[in-house]
Length: 120
Image (cartoon, rainbow, N blue to C red; front, side):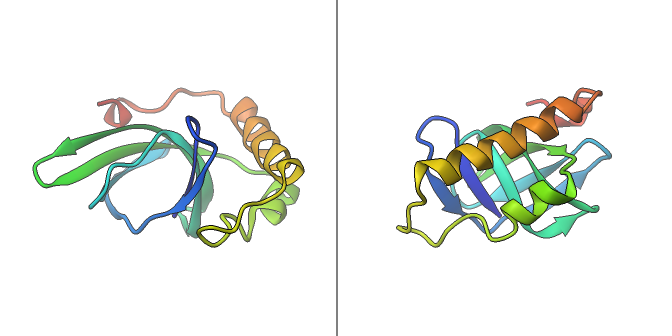
């Protein structure tokens, strides 16, 4: 999955393992700390392609993270389909603004808060 960090506006790619899933989001495990940010699933998870990584913490020798799903419109999904770029390949600011706008549109459509299983 790809993550666009809120703190650094940096796109990174990660291999994660799904540990739990609900209608509102997914819990994942990783070998590395994941920063809160916008998430793009390279393969859809329960028919979802994107979300917001809300929290991440160390548990034992792994890291757990909670991701709230976002419903993407078809045109937003087309925009985001090939995101994130390869590591080290920075996108122009206009593309970054379009990317963030797509996620914000999706966030505005979500009516229910993430389930209790998504909180640390």
